[in-house]
Amino acid sequence: MRALVVWCPDWPVVAALADGEPDTTGAAVPASVPVAVVTRSAVVACNEPAREAGVRRGMRRRDAQARCPELVLLPDNPDRDVRAFEPVLAAVEALRPGVAPLRPGMLAIRSPGRFYGGEEHAAAVIAEQLVGIGVRDVRIGIADDLFSAEQAARLAAVQGWRVVGEGGSAEFLRGLAVDVLDDPDLVGLLQRLGITTLGDLARLPARDVLTRFGNLGAKVHRLARGVDPVQPATRQPPPDLVAEVPFEPPLASVEAVGFSVRRTAEEFVARLGERGLVCTAVLVEAEGDDAARTLLSRRTWVHSRWFAAADLVDRVHWQLRASPSGAVLGAPVGLVRFVPETVEPAAAHADGLWGGGTDERVDRGVARVQAMLGYDAVLIPVRQGGRSPADRQALVPWGERPTGLRPPDLPWPGSVPPPAPTRVFPEPWATSVVDGTGHPVAVTDRGEVTAEPFRVLIRPSHPGAAHGWRKIASWAGPWQADEQWWETEGSTPVARFQLVAEDGSAWLLRCEAGTWWTEAAYE
Image (cartoon, rainbow, N blue to C red):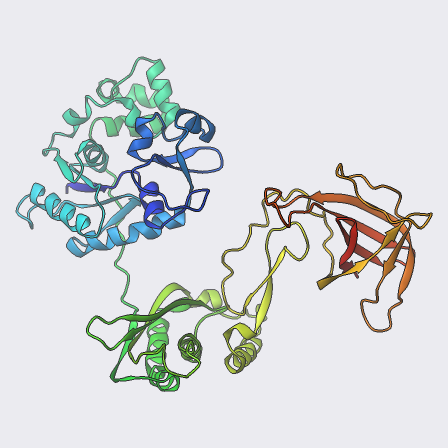
């Protein structure tokens, strides 16, 4: 049972470029320039131009930039790498079921040599299939065991393959350096002991290796001798859960399309229910009736719980209601397709024995209001990163997964420390802060107040509240923030203060260019 390994080098870089990940200036990145995918501290992967400049995987990003000043840095995103590798898995799975994804950029299957007339012919067919879907750098290795097949793939040429004959794994591995082992600590120890090749390691007695290096050393010793009993865990092909409904003749109104997709939506939900699944994110596509099936509309919808048939019909109605005239995107619709992007076990969304979670009646009520008023008419607040209280909140449509938000866990210099204000005014209102002599208080460029704040002018925050000057009992600040200082206009530094009046009311104030504003209240 021989193994065939498909390796796509530098996959994080390939996935980032294919996804159109921009550089730090927002410009597109060509594949011919040195590119590295980095975390906050180290290089995860780099392309060939970067390696020619001396950049290596695991290198600190500062050292990488010192060796290659023109290096383009792209952020690491494991989810993006997995998504980009899915078409590769599907392409190989179409030729040979039982694909085992080892990691993004590498997969393994049982060698299908006899079916294709030989292992080299099978490797050629797989390489041609992947080149056809746009994967240019693909390398294939075939051997008796998984480890030897992986090393053979790493030694193959671009769009080429290397086949290790039956029983020849030990001979093939003998001349490889111990650097191929994916354990820097063990590699360093072996090199310090004078063991520089896998052949040197394989010649050692197995019992001595186990005694000196433990179970990990014994496993590596078996790999060096070409004895790898581990078989890759193959994945089961996912069921075809996509549902589509063609229209003949094509429909030209939103109401007609919404009425016609109802039965398909019910079948879509029922098919998921038979497998014990629910859909929490669905892609809705609408195609035209021309020969090329022009894509008229495409959008991913997310539900706070899971999609029922009525929810899917509402999403189709909202999505196609883009034309004010009522026509469907200015062209008749010939087909509507539901593609489940996220499915979860139905048990994970079942009600608890004693209740808990969101009341289903609340969800249905909000969905009904959303259906009457429109998708963007029902909004919920979510938290995001920012310096001011207004910047830390965002409104998203109910049921939609928040995207494009600023991370709240990043450091935000100049932000006001907790506790957060309970009420943020939509529009800050002007106020005044004076010292004991009645002169206005200001903030210098160094972040110092010109005088001790003594009184503050408060406007009523609600009907019946007191209005007028109040004596300040205590205050804290300033917290300075100089945002977009590189802009020539509209980049005035601001300073925020927390004030507590003698009557117990607490306020968050902002001083900007000598003018005071009340941004929020602590109630």
